[in-house]
Amino acid sequence: MAEVATIMTRIVNLVGNPCTVGPGMTIGTDWKEQMRSPKELSEGQNIKYFVAAKKYYDSFTKRVIAKNIILDMFIFTLNETGFSEMSDLFVTSGGFVVMHE
Image (tube, rainbow, N blue to C red; front, side, top):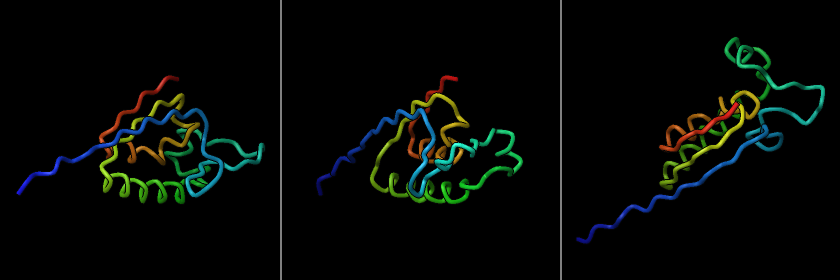
C-alpha cells in the first residue's frame, strides 16, 4: 500500500476588534455596551456573550482539527478581541498567537 501524505493548511488571522455579529460575537453593536475586562471575565461578570461564543469556537475547533488546519493569530489586545473565547482554536490546532498591547 502506498502512503498518502497528510496535507496541512495554515490560516493566519489578523484581529484588531471584537466580533459583533454571528454566533461567535463577543460584544453587541450598542455603543452603551462595554467590552469586559480580564478581571470581570475571571470573576464571571459582564459575560453576556461568553458562553455562546465559547461554545461556537469550541465546535469550530473540532472542525479545524478534523481538516488538518493550523490557525495563527496576530492580535492587538487580549480582552478587546474575545481571545478568551477563541484561545483553544489556536492552541489546539498547533498555531501561534502574537500579541502587542
